[in-house]
Length: 141
Ligand SMILES: [Zn+2]
Image (spheres, rainbow, N blue to C red):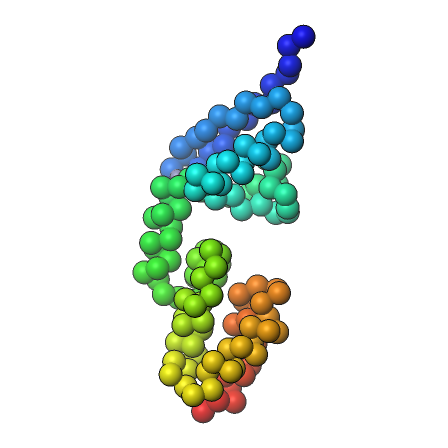
């Protein structure tokens, strides 16, 4: 008996570089995508787990590096949040950018205020932390 192969192409949205998947069971696709992630591919999916059906954006390792370099240059905290710049546990960098964004770098109560914002917002994401921090920042002169 010949096993039917599930074949599909994973293609980078930016440079169009592609990789072929050839697996025999749907569950193996997930593992294949995980392997690619470990090699540096980025999959933005609409839900979890990441499957071929719910991927809306694909970035190859080379394009990911270019993308990150651009975000590093941009220094706009909103661009960086949207671009997933802080995703790899960049807490310290996010905090530094947030303080700078609200003009609170070096403020004696900045750490305390940021901790408060972090406590309230981090479960929902970087945007929420920034929102809470902005709310508190108003009261810090
Ligand atoms: Zn690419």
